[in-house]
Length: 109
Image (cartoon, rainbow, N blue to C red; front, side, top):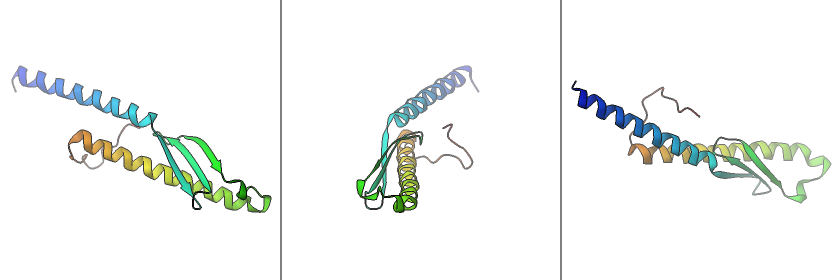
């Protein structure tokens, strides 16, 4: 392999790494809302899957309803996480031109 070819490949790899970092930063800054119970419980997460807020409809705030509310919060978190994962996959497809990642390759976040 010629030195020029190697330099070109290294430059492309660096550009891809910079694009990946920019995409990770963009996704991390996003807010994704998940909901459960027909919108009675809403959870907002960032692109890293960290819960940033919870909104509970006042009609659910009864002591005898505590277990239902807890289950709905878990469901809303799962909904937000699934939406975030889908968004990340869409961003990766955009960045790689539809090319799939090799099996077993995990993203660093």
